[in-house]
Amino acid sequence: MWKHSFTTGVIAKELINRSEYKQESAQGYLIGLICNLGDMIIYQLLMESFAYVHPDCQPNSFAFKNLLIKN
Image (cartoon, rainbow, N blue to C red; front, top):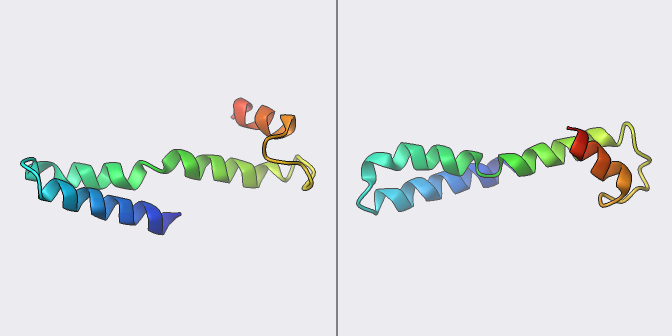
């Protein structure tokens, strides 16, 4: 996940460097890095939820949904 976020940041920076907004490349890099932050948080919550939910439960089950809503 980190490698994907890093690559997204590098690509965003490079695209901005090729545009008329070169001075904003650092901001583009940061946005590229954090654009997947929500995915990482959801993944972390899913991993932590196995301490409370039976491992046979599906991620779309009520128990998972309730835990994600709570957090």
